[in-house]
Image (cartoon, rainbow, N blue to C red):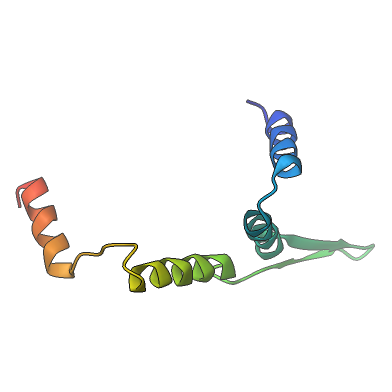
Length: 91
């Protein structure tokens, strides 16, 4: 699929989406990853968002933590994860 076709498909998906939370997340992705370029006779300057972790990542973590606290998600201790990895990779 070429870039223009991908853009068109994304536009259609966004246009038909009725999930306000999803649309807000998509909006934040664009807000946090947009570069602003200003050109004039002298040259140009680019301003790029320097946040290493976008805000929507923190929101997802918060939602998942709330699910964990309500018992809707399970978790493993580091020792359990370490043991499973050692068994899986025979180390």
